[in-house]
Length: 294
Image (cartoon, rainbow, N blue to C red):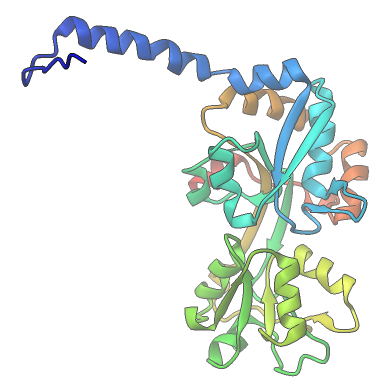
């Protein structure tokens, strides 16, 4: 076998031009690739995490929730009939989207600036006003007397369950809850079991998600009532949920968003979203651009 050794600096301008030109078709061929495949196959892969009422799997295997059901209607308007769902932990949604495991995040993900730096978001589909302390589940009877994050922050012995990658952890820290008090769970159902078994004293998540798990086990779990806003009210804000896409799939985002905007607020949309707690009062009040820049 003959081995050719190159002198340092021996790469010629012509060779560099060949490398550059050969790379250009590869880069340009990626643009539009995902949208073309979806429209050609009439099939799309959505990624979701078990997070009712935003996204979850029914006993019969069907994936439902606010995000999957809206996705079905919007993609149907694009001529796409097959929705294939891929379940992952919430904290893995962005990573697995970027790795190509699926084409869209359909899990009610809130638009946050740090997420905007990693992925592209559609227009928001709902607004959830989350003041600190309102998304807390505790054991029936509330034995620890927890009515807000400030109660947890005051007692280092209180343990709080949060779902990895969600805003619950952000809100808890903003209220002064120590990292040593936090127990991280892969999804809200497992976190709820943590409250039931006594591993943690409370569960923090988006209020609709907490309410959903409480309604499934009302004899053992309850919402922390009355709920009390933290002493740091500036940490509370209105979250907006949306669909997530890879940044290089800008044409897919544009095509999806075009149909989504014409669908939001229609009687059909409100009928679809109502079972998951979205009414006219929860329709978006901000744009993706504004939410990413805040």
